[in-house]
Image (cartoon, rainbow, N blue to C red; front, side):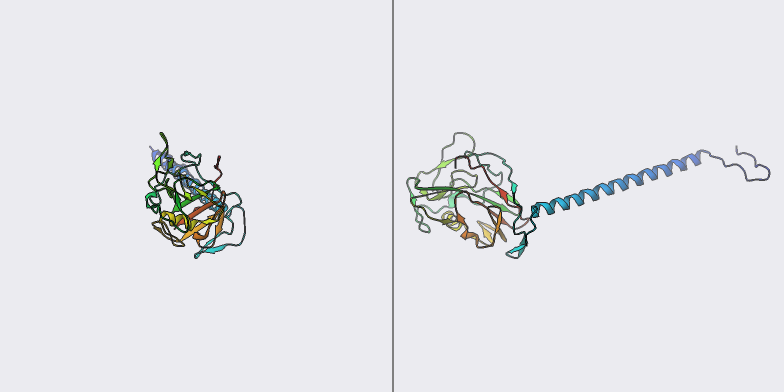
Length: 262
């Protein structure tokens, strides 16, 4: 029952069930609005921090002038300390073996004939013995450099774990024993070889627009810095760290230090 009007003034306000309901609805609406606002601010903060982090990762704190590689602009030096690759599976040479597929089968190696003046001999030549690391990324995903490149008809010497292969016929002066990207240069005399020589042994193309069977703009890095020339001309010198990115995204150069006794 409603209250009676008071003489000389308006009737007193009555808070029935409908009034309390309206207040609860207003309070609920306010709480939902605060929740939406907080969520929006949180998402905005994540996006801003992510953009800042990405800029730092690409610049590495170095503000050198950008350079163009095949029409793609990248920093002249992408960080003084490149990002470290994740060791998915330490292989028989202690170096990590990527989990991806093979770039191309090792079996395409030229079967024993001389290539670019490089011979295939029954024994490993140790007068000149150095090691290089090669990593290849296709559209941002790392692929394997297989064991047995430069070793026709290789035989696995490992009884467990990842393969470590040896020759049954001959060794080219550039070859791989495991799928860890380590290139062994074992030659009878000291001589500078190139990445192009290695790919010629493997019978796989290497250009500014193709690595093995994969085509796309090739971005090359040597020891953490962009390499602007023909990737075939990259020298295979002791403990050089070579990275080839085919297509996009371009993976910042990965460091490598797991040389062990190599």
